[in-house]
Image (cartoon, rainbow, N blue to C red; front, side, top):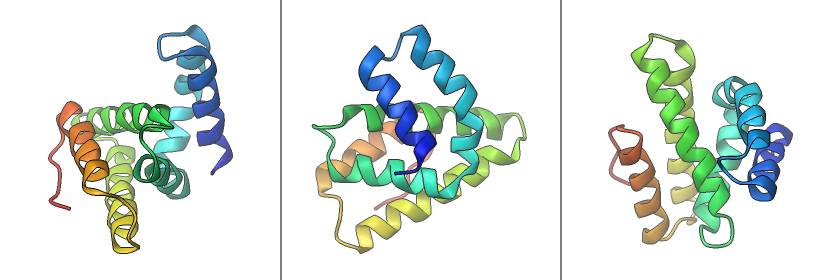
Length: 121
C-alpha cells in the first residue's frame, strides 16, 4: 500500500478516529491522499478485500469521500479527481473479481454517508 495511506491507517488503528494523533495525521495527509491515484487504489483495495478485518480502511475511505464532496462544493479540483480515481479503482477491482456484494454495499453506504451519488456496481 502507498506509504502515506498506510501511515494514516496505522495511526487510525493504534489511536482511534477521535484521537489527536489521527486528526493531526489526517489533516497533514488528506490533500496528498486525495490527489494520489495510487493511494486511492490502495485504500479501495483494502476496503474491497476485507471489511471485517480492516474497518479502518473503510473509515479512512469514508473520510476522504467526505473531503472530496466538500472539495467539489468549493470548486477545488482535488475532489473531482479523487472521485474519478475511486470510481476507476472500484470498477477495476470488480472486473478483477474482487468485491463480494457485501463489499459493494459497504462502498455504496460510504458514498451515501458522504452525500455523494453512487454508481451501480
